[in-house]
Length: 156
Ligand SMILES: O=c1ccn([C@H]2C[C@H](O)[C@@H](CO)O2)c(=O)[nH]1
Ligand SMILES: [Zn+2]
Image (spheres, rainbow, N blue to C red):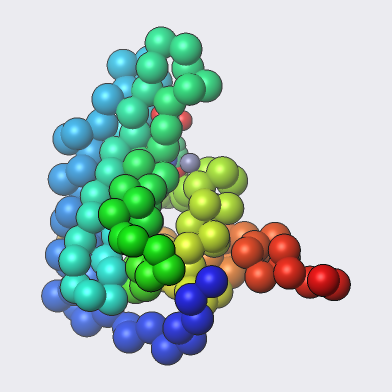
């Protein structure tokens, strides 16, 4: 796991951009079975943005969440041993309070987080409008006592 304990906090403009991308990513959701749209956006330390949306299939457990849809191509587009440094993630749903990443996505995010302080911003039905609900939590808060890549080497 790459270690970067000093993630630069997002400026207001950076957060607005990241949130806007997550909100827009909902328009790409393919969710005819749940009709529950989710958009995700990821900001890397190199300044690039990446988005994903939930993609369902008729065999419903086979579908993928927006968060993993956004993250997997990031990891798969970088040649090893290099790894991305994720600065922040935003997730957008159409409900209040805003939905938070499912357990599977928390584990997936944790795998690629370079610090427990990686912020995850959750937006709800009012998006970015005045007075809209937003929840910010770190991956450490969302997945306490996690089992991650470093634990594989313990006791070896
Ligand atoms: O954080 C979440 C929670 C749910 N979903 C998707 C999975 C499924 O397509 C739909 C309903 O669970 O929402 C996500 O993409 N991310
Ligand atoms: Zn998920």
